[in-house]
Length: 370
Ligand code: HEC
Ligand code: HEC
Ligand code: HEC
Ligand code: HEC
Image 1 (tube, protein in one colour):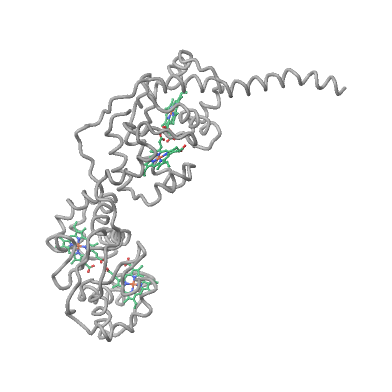
Image 2 (tube, rainbow, N blue to C red):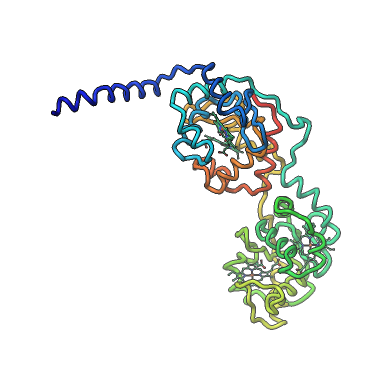
């Protein structure tokens, strides 16, 4: 009985071995791969390996080990895409090797975007956009008119949430609402990153209150706003160096609930508020974030792995020069949000805002594939 079972199993075992061998030493057939591509892939990836619509990656000249790894990741559900999962399930390992050999053997594509186009960093875009704000907030975000808030050095996520509050009317200030009409998230982040990098100017004597009387009253503020009002949390505003009259009106706005925030309740008297404001206004502040100024600086750390010609035997690194811009944005967002499983790329993209992702993607998309 046992022998019989073994004999019956033998052919299966042999087939399994052959399959395994095939996986180890594939003999890719570029022509068979081309036929497969024509039948199953060309509608989206072209026969020249160019994605046929924005958001579809180019495959021409891509690193073969990376292409193979991606297709297996779709098949195993580690990378999620419904169409590719179903398709790759129907392909044998040999067929995957063939189609990979075909696409990786194609010559690199010419960049379709304007090669002379200069990709600006969020900082540079923010700087250009800040011209519209300078008349009130000062050229570099250091406001001088009493009652007008400085923006220099402010925490970037707080900055964006403040803009959104004006835009959506939860901070009911008509001037700011008019200034911001039509602005999108990326444009807000550009401005936030520019202002966060500016150096706040130290203020002289405050226009209201007594700093020395104010200091002891700030004991319960420092846990969130930082020692002496220099915040280290991207969502909490820096108060140091802020205009004193603006601080007074902001604190009163929370107290009177014209500006609503669940953690910013205040029970101080008007005099105490003026003293607190005087204390913070006279503290020395600093830039919240000194980021790279140009997009070339931003991408320097990416080029450590992605620069043409760099090979790393420990990992299959995809080529990203000349890749489709929309696809690059999607891929970087997916890593950022943890939806695409590469802990390395997740960590790389974690500090990246939407504005940075868009400018880095544009930079790579605009370059010739190598
Ligand atoms: C219906 C359109 C469509 C078809 C058909 C299609 N793909 Fe794709 N392919 C896509 C899209 C969209 C993506 C990006 C998915 C994502 O974000 O993960 C993709 C991603 C890929 C990737 C990952 C590339 C990278 O840079 O990470 C590979 C490899 C790939 N496809 C190969 C193939 C092959 C081989 C075939 C044919 C057997 C095929 N695709 C058929 C649309 C298609
Ligand atoms: C006409 C004058 C004016 C212009 C122009 C202007 N602002 Fe303002 N901005 C104000 C005033 C006044 C306030 C304070 C409103 C309040 O009390 O909430 C303010 C508040 C802000 C705040 C909140 C500061 C904080 O600490 O919470 C931000 C951020 C801001 N502005 C950004 C901008 C940006 C970015 C631009 C340019 C696109 C701009 N502003 C243009 C007058 C202006
Ligand atoms: C639990 C954390 C926390 C504590 C404690 C706290 N704050 Fe705040 N504060 C915040 C946050 C978060 C914001 C931003 C709220 C918003 O978006 O309107 C804020 C906003 C402010 C603003 C507006 C700044 C601007 O640029 O418009 C002022 C002024 C302020 N706080 C003063 C104080 C003072 C004074 C105290 C102590 C009496 C204090 N805060 C205690 C978290 C805190
Ligand atoms: C230490 C090496 C390393 C560094 C540094 C690095 N990457 Fe990557 N990158 C990889 C590897 C490995 C993969 C493939 C991961 C996978 O399989 O999903 C990858 C994948 C990608 C992809 C997906 C490409 C595709 O075809 O789907 C993009 C886009 C990308 N990286 C952009 C960047 C950017 C932008 C930076 C700089 C912020 C960066 N990388 C830094 C190694 C690196």
